[in-house]
Length: 73
Image 1 (cartoon, rainbow, N blue to C red):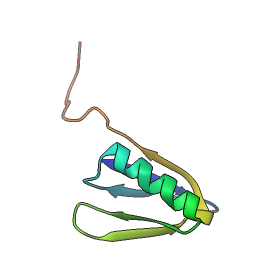
Image 2: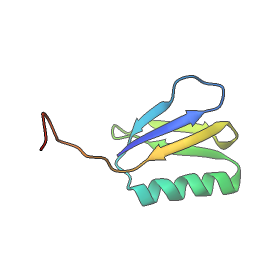
Image 3: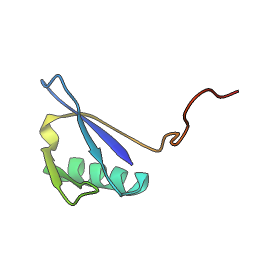
Image 4: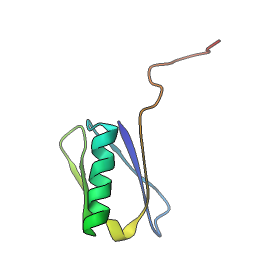
């Protein structure tokens, strides 16, 4: 699943492709905000992304339509 993280005062968003479910990502974000610490995600290749929650502007995640190429009727 693709997770887009907006960071305050940064023009580009951070995009992480993770194997986590939407529910798991939502729990990670909620827990990080409640603790006031950092949001830590692991991408599909095992790399870790850590963002301080004080800098978060938004987190966009969820399933999308995949595998469609060309025109649809």
